[in-house]
Length: 223
Image (tube, rainbow, N blue to C red; front, side, top):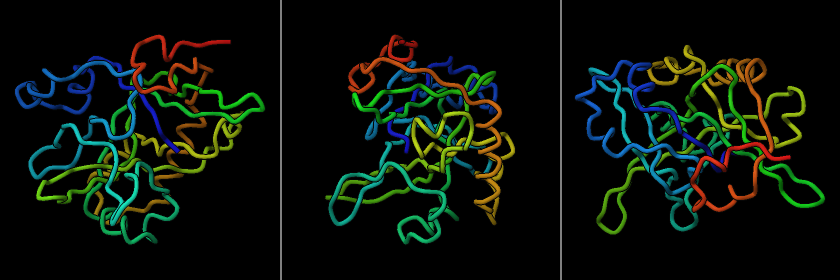
């Protein structure tokens, strides 16, 4: 699964990579700050396809579970089209969530140990996501879920956790945003190859367990 991640790079890197005009993202820039421990229900930086240009903005992490229940933060790539709650969103409301690393917890006899996972040689990457809009008590809300996949069978990555977010290649981003006939199996295959080639990780402090600990030391290696 994906329950915490980071986005710490300079916003200019994102603006230049995706070709956004400075004037278009001025309001976002005024609110942007490096994040070392992004948690569910918080605002995350996302990109969605627009008619004239892509849209960059903040969206809450989590979709309302009706009629009651905790917000849904992840959705399995393998069953997206089988779930009524996601089937239409796959065709109509796909987006990218930007990150430069994420956390997974490894189960041990001593308890759960957190690990920070990132891509070597990549300053940041995008995770496949779905978004939706709904009304509750007369108010309109917008939220998203991050898509997950089986952890690639690479080194001992699967020993940390069996699920990982669906990271997208550059081509995968284009397909995810614009394709009218998305082929999920191809997107997953590209992601598996990307992680096999680039993924690296290290153990971090249990300070990450609390979302309140949002500072650089959270991602530093520990023995």
